[in-house]
Amino acid sequence: MANADFSQNQNPNPGGFDAGSYREAAPKTETARLTPAQQKLAGLEAALPAALRTQAAALALSVVVMLAAFFGFGGAKLKAKANEAAKWYTVGVSADGGYTLSEELTTRANTAANILTTGVNTLGADNAEVLAAQDALSDFNACLEAVQNGGKKQSLTALPYYQGSTMQALYQADAALGAAIDQLYAKLQEQAADPMKMGAVQGQYGQFNSAATIIGNLTYNEKVYAYQKDTGGFPASVLKSLFGVKEVEPFA
Image: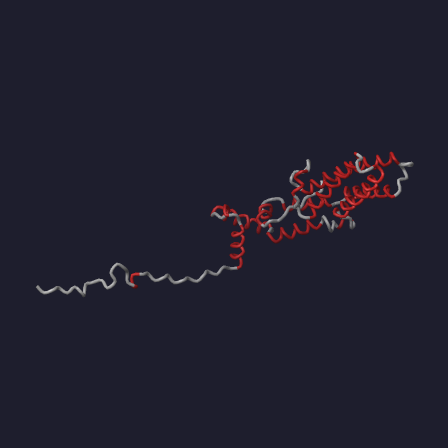
C-alpha cells in the first residue's frame, strides 16, 4: 500500500500558536478634554479623602457647591475673608487707632521679663514669687509663640488649661502671668524704702498693666465674632473644611 501523504493537513506550528491567533492591541482612545469648570471640580475631588470619593459624597459635594454659589460663597472668597481676619492679630482693626493685640501681648512679655529680672536681683533666684513668675512667663511665651507660628507647638499639651485652642490658651496664660507679676511686684514693694517710689521697675509694671487695659478695650474680639457669624453657617462652614480655611479665634 502506498504511503498516504498528510502534508497538506499538518499543523506547521505544532504545540503553539501562529501569529494570527494573537489579538491586536486595542487602539488608544484620545483623552477626553475637560472644561475649566470640570477641571476645577476634578481637582477638588482628587483632594478629598478616599472615603469621600463615592457617588453619594460627590452628590453631597455638588449640592454644597450649588448652595454656596446661591448664597454667594466660594472657596476663594472664604480664604480671602479668613486671610483678612487673620491679619487683625498683627495689623489691628481700624477702630483701635493703631493698637494691635500682637504688639500689646509682646509688651506684656517684655515688661514681665524686666520685672522678673529686678525680682531675681532683689529677692534672689530661689524666691517663691520669682519662681512662680518665671513659670508663668515661660508658659505665656510658649503660648504666644504657638499663636504666632500657627499653633504648631506640642509643649502646649502640658499646660493645665490647654483645651486645644492656642488663642484660648494664650488668654489663660496671660491671666496667669498677670497674677504672678502682681504678686512679685507686691513682694518687691515690701523690700522697698518707699513702695510708691520703685524707680525703673515701677515704670515697667505700669506698662505691663497699661497693655492689659488696652487689650481689654480692643475691638479685635468684636470683629472676630462678626467674622465667625458671617462664615459659620451652612454651606460656608462646609466649604471652609473642604478648602482648608483656618478658623480665626477671639482672645477671650
